[in-house]
Length: 509
Image (cartoon, rainbow, N blue to C red):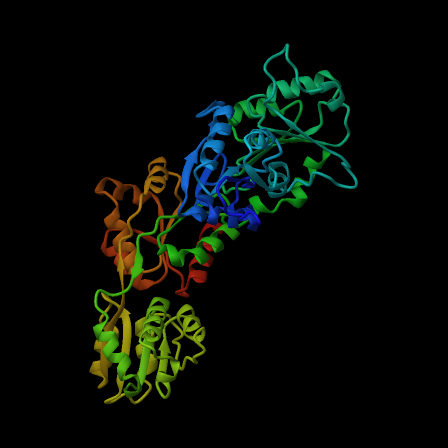
């Protein structure tokens, strides 16, 4: 019988890349989704672990030169877990086989008769240099690359690096994990006749929004590092290619580079906003304050679904309303043909797109994405005695249905979903809040404001006064200001894209 790929005892060594979660390979992500156990290192982006939502997570990282567990103990842990679990992912920063001790772990697995698979990752020299805007090779400057560990020397008497030959190389030298050994690296290179004026770049936290680059020469970089108090993790590039940074730099010049921006949307809706922020160089910190779930009682919506053809208009105020409405329609063994002859209204492009995804045409989308603007559009129609269905959140603004009723219409407001506070830990957010490293908090609805503030203790509220508050529109702004927040950013176009654009403009000034 062919051995099943998911049988017990399968260890997968996965390279997580140098930091940016987007640099994880598709194969690596697939294995994380399947994992029963994930054993991960210190420099792995913690957000990558979200892919392993059902796995046991075991941290075995090394930080500031101190290990929580020895390499032999890690080897034994891999073997132990492989004997009782199906899929064990050994998640390592960068690539497992480039100074990642992947070879040692594979040897131990082989001796124990444990099956293993290798999933390469983008090595830190490749990823970090690219994000720093420094090409490691260039036809005019370097045709070779040397990758050297900066932390494998045990002292003056036990040199493991051939400094004499390395110093004579004309290509690019890349030192990994060398922040603490930088003075010794420079001293040895100069000792063996490396030109003291050779350009040097030290990159900290490469490929992340915390990335910072210092430029100098062999003569000056140690003084720069001392003055700037450069700490690990760093990567050091030595060679003429460093001078190209001013031309090829791209990441550190992004409009929101280095900014930490909190996203308070529901986790299932936050992905697009997070990606847009990260594309602009920001660190997007998810602190979901809202979760959408089915309503406590479907009866009102179900009654409306039985008589859909009796409505003149169907109004959607959010993509959530569209999602839960269409989901319930399907569960009741009905389909979009029930909407024949019903006029469809949608507030905002996202809501409109959600409707269009059902292969239904939207008849009216107001220019301004708020209820008041839709009222203005509907007011141009003769709606006397017309009947409207409004599937929405259990708690919603009353201005739209009340105004339509005043205009002579009949409106059925039915709960299609409800919003609740998610059960989660805000530890990472609170840590950055206390450290004062958050630049912006974004709110995309009134419920995100209310739930977010209710999640925080009163002693944390004062710290919000020092952070820029950005709201998607005037309704959300009013809720925030009513709760004591000072709102700085409100776009003229009440969309996520408009919100991000206005944040960019704010920082550009």
